[in-house]
Image (cartoon, rainbow, N blue to C red; front, side, top):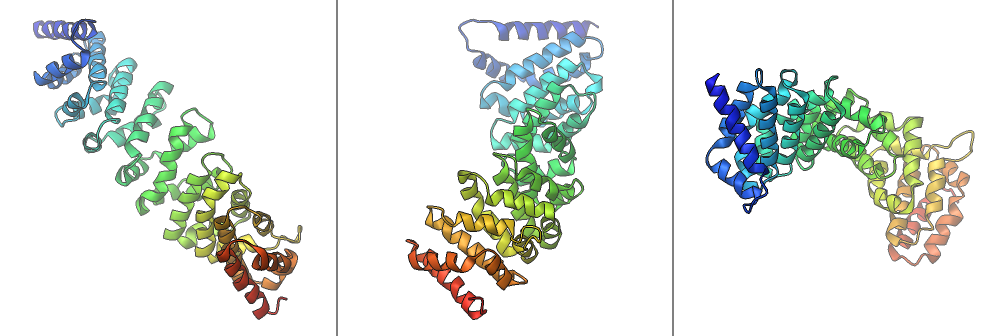
Length: 377
């Protein structure tokens, strides 16, 4: 009991010193405490007094939160194997602590995630990702806890394929998909994580398969600001597992989703044209599905939209569109029908004769020659 009294007094004293508005900047005070080895003692004390002195345990968490806002020297001492595992224990066993204390430790971890890459590696070694994912999935977690978890995961996964894979394997996909479907304010952090997972590894994509990842990305193609990330994810996955992804993309739902891309607003359309072209070029089933004539309309809506885009002022865009049209023509099961239904002969001839872009004219000439060779004219 006497030793606990001394601990409580020390915590109160530290908090009072850090809250002072004196001449010494708080960062300098944090550095001084760190150099005295206080962090290791404080984290042990927080666990030791938690059962009997909850308010002081939470005050210890306040001190860690203040330290986590200090400079990189202080954060480096926090991101060590003597301190981090003890902090992780709090979010690994949240039922043993007051919700306020758990939230403060979550904020502390989030601040550490904003530090240098070396600190990120230490967080990964301390199993931050599986603990954060488990807390995110926990039903009893408050909305603010979930918000801190998503923010920390976003920072951890932003530039690391290994951490993206670890998050996927730990089960991050379902809770993030739920946040996105509900239109949560956290959607802006959840979406980049989910889109990056497709690029992480085969193992990460295996997790996405269990939660209809391809269908999820196709649905995002109609979501402004996230179309490009979703299309990039689909392309990476298609190049790795062509038959699996193409089987879903060639369905009517997939074709309609890709049609949204060809009809997208100008800036988004230009940015998405290259990955769209690569999808068409690298997958014969998808290419044929996009060029297929709808019996009710008498045309392919995708090809119809593509032809309208051939008036684009950018020569590079026109060149890519023509190359895509060439692929659609070559892979079509009935190329003559494709040309006739979409009135392609005069369109291609006009480009061949009058387009200001030399390379555009060359591709149009090649396509026109193909029409001649197949007796389409």
